Amino acid sequence: MERLLRRSTGVSTAAVATATEKVDEVRAGFEALYRDSRDDVYSYVAGLLRDRSAAEEVTSQAFERAWRKRKQINRRRGTPRAWLFGIARNAALDELRRRSRVTPDAEPAPAPDPLANPAEAAVDRAVLRQALDSLSGRERELVALKFFAGLSNAEIATVIRTSESNAGTRLHRVIEKLRRSIDEAD
Amino acid sequence: MRLTDEQIGAELRALRETPSEQFAAELDAWAAEGFPSIEEIQPAKHSHPTRSRSRILQRRPLLAGLVGAAAVVILVGVSVAAYLHERETGGMDSAISLDTGVNNELSAPAQDQARTQVAPASGAAGPVSSIPPAPPNGSRPRNGRPQVQELSASLGLSTDADQIQGAADGVVDVTNRYDGFVDSSDVHVAGDRSHAFFTLRIPAVHLRDALDDLSDLGRVTLRDEGSTNVTGAYVDAGKAFRDARAKVDSLLDQLRSASSPTEAAAIRQQLVTARQELAAARSALRGLKQQVTYAPVSVQIRADGDGSWSIGDAADDALGVLKAIAGATLITLAVLVPLAALLALGWFGGRELQRRRREAALNR
Image (cartoon, rainbow over all chains, first blue to last red; front, side, top):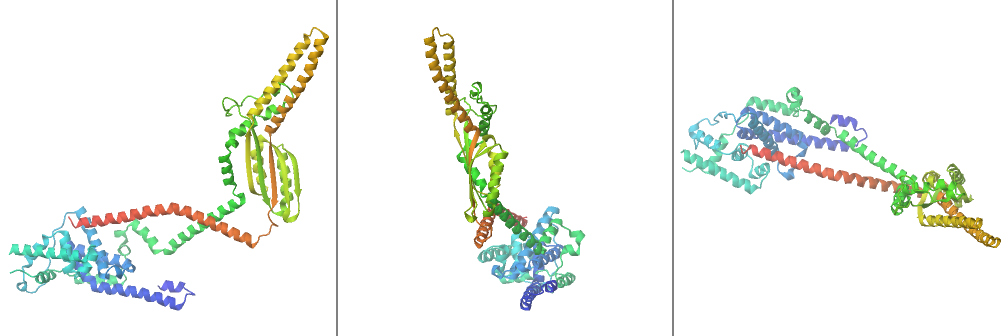
């Protein structure tokens, strides 16, 4: 912008000020999006890849790509979060493809249990993880988008390119499947 | 106990992984710098030539603008050049193609045939040389007989009023250069009403070259070339001549063997008539050969103004340039639109393929 200002002799001050405000607005908007979504993007990607190191790499890539494309944010096509998660999804799927070509799936790293008192849990976490592992990639993605990233059904629909009702239906089926798996384990 | 959706959701949220403090701090620092690309941070590890080239174009809209401007300049330049060429030649190309299409007797083989008539014409005085010429090698006879063509042409030129005299002199020069001659001429120099009319006879063998040189003397407004097949008349004239000659020879033989003065006088009387018929036949044949050998050419030169450039001329030129630009644009679009459609199709196809491949990763 500074370079633009130096070159733009003869351009009205108001026009330069307007352009500056617009650039600042886009940047500020992206920074807010980053602050709100950083942990959610990581959680979604980690839930999809089940690999902390790869999740960090993909999260970085996703934000870098999003920063480059920040001017493409279009609220009429969905929320900025949905747009960001669309980019993160592409990066994560690229990583999944790459890993499937290079090596077989690595053994998922055991995740730390965030609860201080496991006894308070309504369900055995090990059973829940086992049920999660039994899900297909598409089903696990829905869980990651809904419960790890905290997206609404409308945002999920935008990310996976389907209708909101279809996204809700598919999500309900996944929860039912998890419930059955847990019940069977009990 | 059956778990509710809310309970399952809460348990799933409890499994949510969060980034480590170190990674979060690094990511924040990176964000504070404006997310410099990975290639910029680690060029050796992440260098990707194709990606780098595409970024050059992405980050240099000025370059793309210059390329676009250059394309526009080339388009306009080509259009103006095409218009000026069209103006200089007076639409000659199209006129010639039309004439060629309508009157294909003016094609090269026809001219070759016309050229064959030159040699016998030069020696047409004697009875031996009056025999119709044999077809030359490479000619295209019809029904086994060589064709004889009589060529003719009309040329209309326009020039500035003050250049009429010079153009008229040029007509005479061109005629002399090709061993032709001026049948008649009328040169009138009077400002905007100046004009010059010529009737020329140009050797048929040089007709096309002479017309090209005459066309250079002004702006061509009309160029018309024609031909008439005179093979029948030529054959008839030759036969008439041979018959008349044979009759004379026969009478001379009879005269030599005449047995009485009375018989000799009668034969001589017939011989006078036969020789008159022979002379007439020879004259007719010679005239026909003259027509075939020298093509009549009429040239009209008219003044089209005093040479100054008026507002009307400017408007005409502007309109002409616009037409040329429109034509060039149309041609360009005819090439670019299908190309762009193909590229768009390929782009959308590529995106769809990439999307399907990504989705397939979830099925594994």
